Amino acid sequence: MPAVATELEIDRLIRELEEAVEQQAATSEVLEAINRSGFDLGQVMQIVVSTAARLCKVGPAGIFLLQDGVYRYWAGQHVTEAYREHEKRAAIRAGRGTIVGRAAMEKRAVQILDALEDPEYEDKEAARVENLRSMLGVPLLRDERLIGIFALARNYVEPFSDSQIKLVSTFANQAVIAIDSARLFEQVQTRTRELAQSLDNLRAAQDRLVQTEKLASLGQLTAGIAHEIKNPLNFVNNFAALSAELTDELKDVLRPAALDAALRVEVDELAGLLKENLSKVVQHGKRADSIVRNMLLHSREGSGEIRSADINALVDESLNLAYHGARAENPAFNVTLHRDFDPQAGEADVFPQEIIRVLLNLISNGFHAVTKRKAENGYVQFEPWVAASTRGRDDCVEIRIRDNGTGIPAAVKEKMFTPFFTTKPAGQGTGLGLSISHDIVVKQHGGAIEVLSEPGVFTEFIVILSRKARGKILER
Image 1 (cartoon, rainbow, N blue to C red):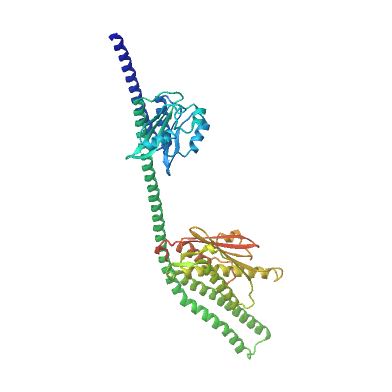
Image 2 (image 1 turned 90 degrees about the vertical axis):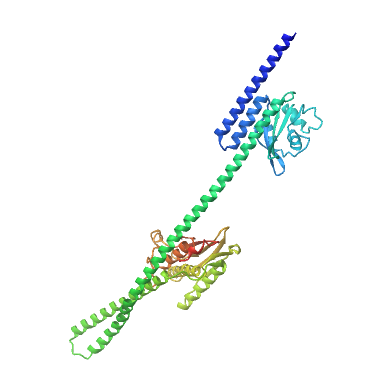
């Protein structure tokens, strides 16, 4: 009899030893898998659940995490897809009605020997359909604070052993460590992204500062050149105008002279040709003078201080100024103005006078385009109009200036922001308006300016301005 007892004891010890070795090996496998998976929390949880389920010889097993006061299914393995979806939809609260709620309420490992016979277990229909009998719930604790529940269920009635409960508790602790590691990793990643964005912003600010310095140096150089050109140009213009008058005086002086008819005709032709040439010198001299004045305007320092301004008010003021200016220059000028201002456009940080300057230029270009098209149409069957609209966005505001004028060919559109490029007749344009407007919007305000056009149909300029200023480096 004693010999039999000894053999039974040895068999029990061997089984326990084999079980302990298996559990130890499984624990090592889980740790190794966690190391391989890195910060893929979903994969780590799946490894923990499947290993625990295999060692404890259970079917359904899952981890439920605490979210907004309820426990929701996060990872696991189940008997059927329908039961998995049932678990995902469930929002379990602490209480005696479920294994998850019961473990959450007691904050310790708890068992239900038979779910179908337990008087407090509520979801008996699901347990019967899925044949869920013995259950184990183990809390996931972080610094004594409950963050979730590890739940397992068998398809037969058999209590979980102390070694199995201890094993599941170990895996629960590893799950908590994995959750914390993933949370810290995400925080590091978020902070890294924030720092990377800050670095990008800093680099953009640095580039803008360099560009601003370049513009300032170029502006000083341009101003110096323009001043040097202005004086001799004034002499050219003045002497050309004076010489044109002298040709008339020369003709008057020669009129009493005794010249034969052929010679007088030749003198008159030469005088007329000289006067015509001088008038062209005057015309082009005036354009050159206009270019010089715009160069000086282009090179001057930024006007005023950046401040928050009502965009709709700026656009409306610019529209009125441009219209009345065109009427003052040509009383016969007439065009229909359309306004479509979004109340949500609100305010933006800008240099108000500079933005008005841009809008005046774009609106004036629209006036020129519709006037030209009306002239080409013979002043019939064409109603010229210019429309100004605004649209508010979350972090920016959009301004559109549209006209039904001559439109812009593709070849011209590619060059239109190039300094001194113009399609207007001599004396009517310097080719600096759009270049200056581009610099003000893009380089000074950090915005964008785009153009849409269909020749013979319309042209639309789109100005996009950020609501918030990007610092004093915007000043030129």
